[in-house]
Length: 257
Image (cartoon, rainbow, N blue to C red):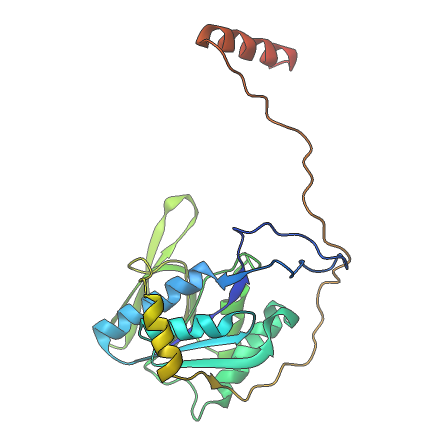
């Protein structure tokens, strides 16, 4: 199996996000980046498939802050290759990102073979529509299934479990090669010690793909970014249950409820 995992760096929302002075971007002074959660699950799913069915896992990422650490971590976890595309992900929109990844696959010695599975994350916090995987599948002329939470391989086909709204799930059979947008892996992402990551930094290397940025395409005109403003506050009711209940009843009556 040839398993390709597409990784994306996203702002760490543990830190407070602020709009930069240009009003068109996030303030990067204190901005930290981390691996997108669904992408981390995509990597775990690829490693699980490798352990069960054999093959190689290749982690591919666009250039971004702290992406080298993420790629070395992927190698420490069990990926066979790490590839960085020297194109700044911040300069690309959804369609351009898909075109860049498509150009990477076009640059390979041969098109995706019948034992190839491409696993991007289903979505990212800055791309909740999850369009990159679908666009990429269209550009590569491959079947696509998104919001996948389980993957099994047998007889040259993929059996994938897809999540729907309302807690529903559907099981689909997809021919290979294919693109699957991973929402969650069969198991939680594995932990790798820092010492193992440092060992990977010394023993392994990150390859650089000779892929250029795509031609600029029509995109939304971002005029200004705003930080959400607080428009109200919560009123905490304290005291004995009887007093709190009376206060709630009064508040509801005042609002005509």
